[in-house]
Image (cartoon, rainbow, N blue to C red; front, side, top):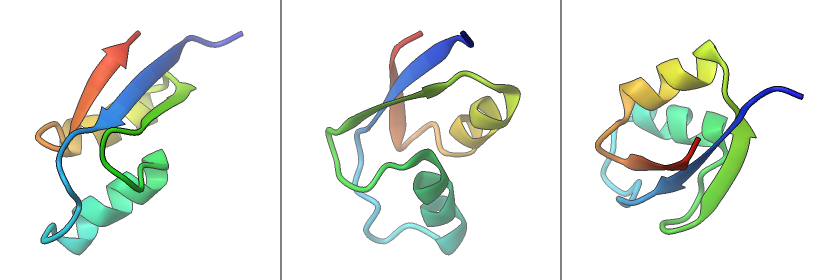
Length: 60
């Protein structure tokens, strides 16, 4: 099984650019303080690196 990563949206998506909202949609993050566990791939890491001010990594 592939490694997983748990991320949490810590800042609101309100007032963010459309590109940032698309990144959040790709990660499946809709509301604040909700954690989501997804596979840890280079593509996911790239999305997280685009919006580090909005999300936090809870566990690796």
